[in-house]
Length: 330
Image (spheres, rainbow, N blue to C red):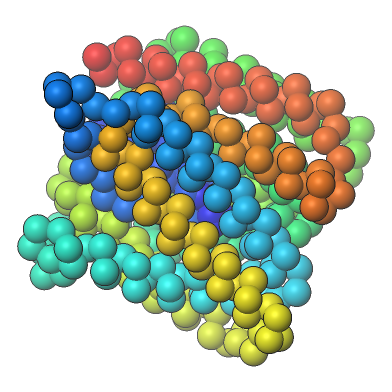
């Protein structure tokens, strides 16, 4: 989902592109499939087409989140997540089976506990996001969730032992000031949806850092497989007790939700085949624009000025941290 999600200051290596998990980012799950190096034709990659595909992916993720909100308002979010992950697991198996070594290679991980923890985190985070969509709305949830790249940067020191310079710490501070502008503490009662959105951002940032951690020993193919399979198993354990048959018409929405997830991730794969992650990252934020349009026109949400200003500050701070990470890496 929310869809998703996705550094987003996320993994620097190309095996785990920055906003890939984010675009799944915000869409929250599941993360992007294992990308391949950009194809070069006549000595250059097709960056323009890759950017176009990333924008299309962001639009589909936004639509996906709208379906998640609709279904989450009628059924337990964990049930919606469980059905989504069943379909996603089949997609993962089909994709990984086509990679060198196939499923036999994908199963072999050097960090099984961490891989399982990643899957658990992403499932719970997705459920929280859907609940936040229902309680807070698409616009408010995504506005708060944009803080997660800053959380990744802040936590990369204690979790991965990386050095975060004063420039990025300044950007992190500015970004959290933007979150305070969005939340307006003291002027209103803190909505549970806001808390869930913040917790989701925190969980997704930890998921991203763990992804970066396992990338030291496991290739993207392995991480992708374990995310889907461990996630589906976790979602089933948590959701099977909440099973109920969807109304006939709602199965259509669920089918569209799952279809959006598969199409968006296929487009994401293609985008990363055509262009570098660093070139695509900024355009993943177009999902915020689509979410705002859908939230206002479809769900009657109100786009308050403090949310607009705060989100702009958070996104700018996040892009700065990504740029600084790229400068340090280059």
